[in-house]
Structure formats: C-alpha cells, structure tokens
Image 1 (spheres, rainbow, N blue to C red):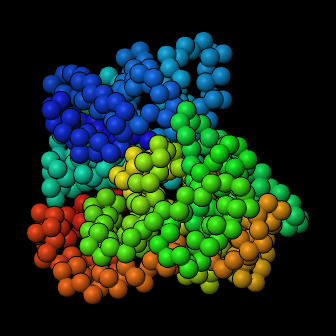
Image 2: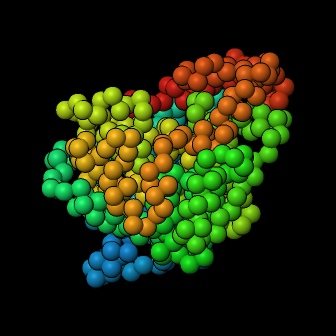
Length: 501
C-alpha cells in the first residue's frame, strides 16, 4: 500500500508538501513527475511502501509508451495476467504487480483487474481515476477548476480547508477530459453481485465450498516480498484466517490485544495460537488515561470519520500497528468482512427470514469504504505503515456466501454455520462455537474508554448512535483547532463527500 497524489494546476513544491503530509503511507521512496498539456501543469506523486519488487524498478510513477501511472494497492491476479501478457509479447521492466495496469490500459482490459487498489493514469489529454469494487483503498478528489486527487483528505485539507471534497466512487473508472473538463464516470466497473441463489444440497458441501473459497482467497493475497503477519482477536473470523496462513507461512506471528488479562478475546486468542502452534504477540495497551484520551482525539483525524465504534476499534488497532512496525512487519491479514457476508450483526438478524435477506447482506458492502475499510486502512498506515489485507472481501467467496439462504447460514446461536462447518476439523470447538462479540467489547476496552471520555469535561461525545462527536473547547489548545472549526471540517469534508457529483 502507498500514498498517491495527482494534481492539475499546482507545483512540484505543492505536491511534495501534500505527499509529506501522508508520508506514513510509504517511506521507501518518493517519486514526483511533472507534465505539460497545453496550458495545464499535471503532476503525479507517489509515496512508496515497497512490498512486491522492493528494488528501485518498482518505484513510481511508472511509464509505458507515454502513459504514466501511480498506484496504491495490490493486484491479486497479477501472476496470471503477467504470464498471459508475456505470451502476447509484452516486456516487463519490473516484478511489481502495479506494472500490469499500464498494459491492461493499453489493451482496454482494465475490467480484468482483481485486487485492492486505487490509481491515477495520465494519458495525453485525460486523467483516469479508479478504485476497486468495494473501495478498499481511499481516494479523494477536489475540483475548483484545478484538481487534487489524493489518498487521504489531509493532503487536500492542508491546501483547501473546508473545501468541497468528494470520494472517487468505488467500483468505477473515471475519465477527466483535459480539453473540456468533462467528467465521465463508468460505474459498476469491476464487480457486481450475482443474483443466483447458491444451490448446494447439503451443509457438508456448503462447508467444503466455503473452505475452498477462503483458502483460495488467502492464497492469492500472499503476493509479497516482505514478511506477513496476522491479527488474531480470538474470534472465529480471525482464527480462520490465522489457520489458513499458518499452513502457508512458517513461523507466522499473530498479534492480539492484551488490555485486560481476563478478557474473553485474549483467552480465546491464546487457545487458538497454542492449538495452531503459532507465535502469539500480546500487545499491551496501558491504562494511561492521558495517552488514551489523546489517542482517541488523534484517531478522529487519522480515520477521518468520527464514529464512536471506529474510534474504539481504531485505538486498539493503533497499538497493534505500532508493535507490528517495530517487528518489521509490512503486511498484515485481518478477519474483517465476515460479519457482513453472513449477516451476523445482531441489529440485522431480524431480517434473516425475509425474502430479500441476500440483498440486505450485499447492501452492507455498499458503505464499507468509509466505515471499517477506511478505519483499518488509515489506522494501520498511520501507526505502522502496514498494508492490511482482508480475504473475506474476496469476490468469489462473497458471490457464493451472500447468495446462500438462511437455512445454510445459521442454526440456533451459530450465525456463521458454513464457516463453523468448514473449519471445525482444524480449530478448537471453543473457538468455533463461541458467542459473537464486538472487538472492543471482547477486549474489555469499550466500557473503559467510554467512561473515560464521557467523564472528561474537555472531551465529550454524544451517545454512540450519533455519527458526530462533540469535541470540547480544549481541542483547540491540544490540536490547534477550534470546536466549531473541527466540527465544520468533519461535516463538510467527510459527511458531504459520499456522493459523486
């Protein structure tokens, strides 16, 4: 994962400053290229986190026959595409998976990309912007006659506070014509859920298929020239991913939160790690009130999305990211995405017997790009410069799972029946059949942090059901922002950018 910036109407110095603000997204190399088209000054910038082909050959911007490219992310089907394109006569300059995007663009085959990515292409009189199907990696755009496209809001807000900033739409290819300034958005570009009900006659077959799809999802995400680790909360989702990784990666390290020694998540993580024979790194989270208050405030700016749940999870993940970085980790796996695919959130289980149950679960993926995915991406990058991979977001797995009827999904209190059936032979029964717990609850962190913040007269937030937090007047003294200004920026630059105009 990396950080990208593309501008029209700005200078190299401007772009370097924008990249510096998001230097946490990649410290292995910085590349800036400037181009002229008529009276327009176009600049592409890139902060590199080197994962595939760590040599200078993988540095960006990349060029092929006059087409320039900056990419943030990974292309899962790169090995297959590379073999095919070599047979077509294409010569690769590097072993970076990003390079294949240039060739696919030349052949008008970008739709074939499978991965987690956002990118910008400059070609003659146009800029092309794109994000993967679920918006795993953030990308924003600001347009006031000039343009800024960037991986994080921070790069744009630094130059244009309170500006009208928008998300580049997920699952899209956007073309900006530099002659006319016309913007064409090609929606639903990479993936659309199938509406065909998954028909397998037995639970056993559903479990076998689930195992196969998740095994393949993990395998394709092993693409890396640097060490890989995993987050192991102790729940079934992260346990499944940890098991599958342990079959492929010798000496795998699994990281878990050690906030409270009596917490159920820590106990289950220990059981799972011992059973699988993987090293468990217990990440200590101190009961340091001032540190945690500051981390709470900092997380709002890092995540760029002021939701109580995201702050609580983000704080815990920040400590994991810091420890992983100290241990030299650049790539980490997570179990996120499973709850959406199985519909295992208590708040939506009431719809499990409705005829549109599959569609309800599919809809949960519509807003992941500014919820769990944005939090996971920005926290791990900010606190560790670590790329987070989530196999449960695999499209083959999701097309299968979201089209299962509820008779195959749940039995009693087990709301992830295919997962339980698939991995029962490989994981302890107490991991498979444990009750579902939110991460912040299972670590015993939720009540502690909420009481801590609510009882502080200078840091105050509304009930967790509300979207926005109210930051007290002390925020200005601590962070250089006034309460009103901070809330205005959060509102105008976050809450108002969900729709492309």
